[in-house]
Image (cartoon, rainbow, N blue to C red; front, top):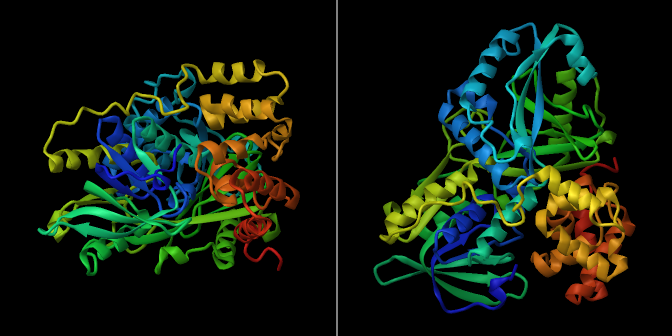
Length: 546
């Protein structure tokens, strides 16, 4: 990946995309794959906000059936299958267990009806390229079998459980990156740490360019474009207001969602739990631990100021323990916590939990911003289809023929493999000198690019050193800097590798990663120590020392 802002050109693009989360990444890929010239700018790191604060799931949204959003569920289930096909190394089937209790909301017959409808809406679950990705129908088990899978389930009034299947994204940050790499492979120009600071207009008032500031060196660049796509997630409304010079007619609602990394509850199944206030959360097996999430609490303020707070963590912890009817988790059990803000277009419901996850594509011409298209709302799973919707409007605005989409069937960059099982097995058996768990992790996380990581390790034996318990190595750090635009320590530990996903790494590991980056990026010792301090501040659990 080449950081375009370092060597900008004077060309006029068809599209300038503002925002490098999953929505912007999908729009850039969809447009570039259909022959449009595209430049994408992200003011921080790619996928560094909402897109990296997910539950690491690719799912149909079973609970949306409660709100009769059958279209959204069907769209999500179709996109789930497509992502299994185009990113087989990153998306995997996962069984979910919903315990049934005597009562109304978790009654086995009420849930059974939902399960049957969910199965019907996912009629194409078996139409996958990879046989291992085909999902079974739901089935029912008794209370004893449910507690065997999840011994901590409250036993009182437990009548059994339903098991259904959705998918897990083992590394959503790298899935977002795969869409960006695919866009670049089709000619898109990409830049992280590049903030859109102003809109340029023609004499008729049409937006024809954007000013972009390189956050790393302060240089300003004018980028000309026929259309500008505002895909800034929680910042989209603010960009609209800046463009119009007034309050937006399309305000976004923001919802905080946090996740906790804790000791493992279940090795094989994700649990779907319902709080006494009738709000669900997941407990998901992940890297030998459990990921518990998510919350849904309205956030008011500047999204730049958002951080996970101790209060949010403790409130969620209280909800979890109340749901189980006893203290199953202490604050000291939490190894890591992360959160983000969901941009929601539905501003009329009483709570953000019941707000729709639908997206909107807004034509700026209606608000005096001709040349601007804004994307608001949506969910990770449906982002590729959202991009198709954006391209329908782009086609109309540009007034020219655009080829049909190819992104439904074409594997993403790094995911060009027929059998994922054979691919992983070949990686494990065909590379002597590397640990088996390292080879498996790299094959799944990096796809076909894992060989480039191994090549770096082969050139310098020091880069073979392990930096996590499940096999990650220092060569990933070098690859992230040279090939994936990593410019800060947190880019590497949170979004190019999974080192920081497990919580604050040991100081020795942070020092080694920072030293490799310092050598690659010519950091001074002062800069290196500043990066380490920033990473520690970010990764230290709020209130952990109390």
